[in-house]
Amino acid sequence: MGQQEQQILIAAAARPPAAQPVHELPPVAKEISGKQFALEKNGLGLLSIQFTFAGGDTALLEMTLAEGRESHPVGLDGVYRISRQSPDAPPVAVRGAWLSENEFGFTYNMFAEAQNMTARAVFKDDGVSLQLKDPSNDLDMTIAGRTGE
Image 1 (cartoon, one colour):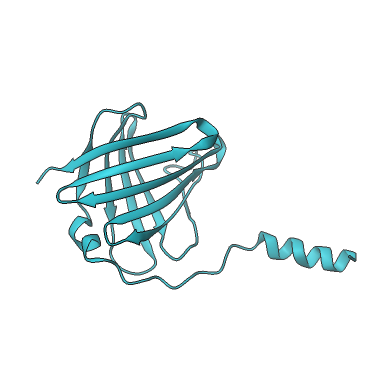
Image 2 (cartoon, one colour):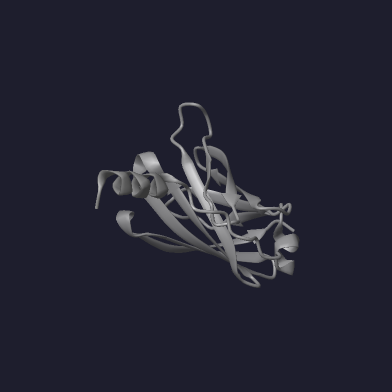
């Protein structure tokens, strides 16, 4: 392989993936959108989680932790959305998709801490079961939560 072909392959690998079509949101997305789920006590200090689905290719993930509140856009089109909580904070990349009528899966990457967490939020009635995995940090836990309604 010549140098020109190598440069073409390197440039292609550096480009983000092409956006995919966003499927129609399931009915539960409207039901839970903007609702805060208080979570049971857990080792991550994650107190609550909230998803907002306003339509389009981006959702919003909001989390309350012992250290404060975080808010991150979530790419629904297969492309990560990168955000920072402050200019000094490490970048976070999040993307997600509906896996079934009541299950939303997302990937949360925090580059500076080598954190690559996959999560599944399963919604039923007024509750959520949040399944979190990060093999690089030996994380494998499920946290239950409920809305305040």
